[in-house]
Length: 203
Image 1 (tube, rainbow, N blue to C red):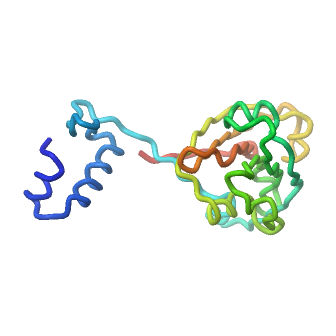
Image 2: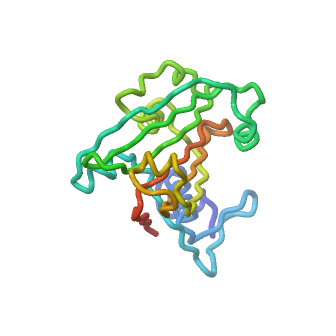
Image 3: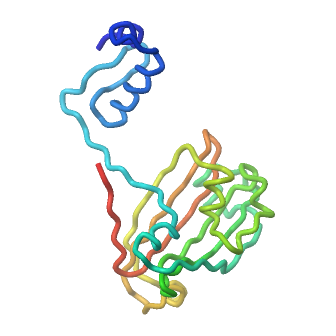
C-alpha cells in the first residue's frame, strides 16, 4: 500500500487520521503492518474475536437482576512464589489479596479472587473496597493497557461449592486474567462463575 504521507495527500486529510485508519484495519485483520516494511493487504484476512471486559455488576443488571456485592476478605502480604513467577515480581513484592462475591437476585453469580501489585498501584492499599469491587476501583484508578486471559473448566472443591451454593464436583467456568499497565504488572484475577454461565463474544 502507499505510505501514510501519500495516502494523506491523496485523501486530503491529516497523517494521524490515516495512521488511525490503518491501525484499525490491522486490528480487524485486513492488513499487516511491519516497521520499515510498510503496510500490506492480507491475502486471507483474519477474524478476531472481541471479548468485552464487563463488570459483574453490569452483566447482572443487563439481565434485569438485582446486583449485590460482598467483600469476603482482604489482606496485604508478600507475593507468593507462584504469583511472583507469573507476574515477574520480586520475591518480597507486596500485593493486596482480595476475595469477594457478586450476587444476582441474592444468588451467587461470581466469586472473584484478585492479587494486586501494590508497587504498581500504591493507592489500592488503603482503598475502600467495602462497597465496590476491586475490578471497578481499578478501572477508574489504574486502567490496564494489556491483558492475557485463560478460560478453564473446573470442578468445584468444597470451599468453592460453599461460596457458590452448589455441591462438590459441580462443573464451572473459571476465568484467569492478568493485566499490565505498559510493561508493569497490575493484577492477577481468578473469577469463577455460577454453574450454567455462558460466555459470548463478537467478531
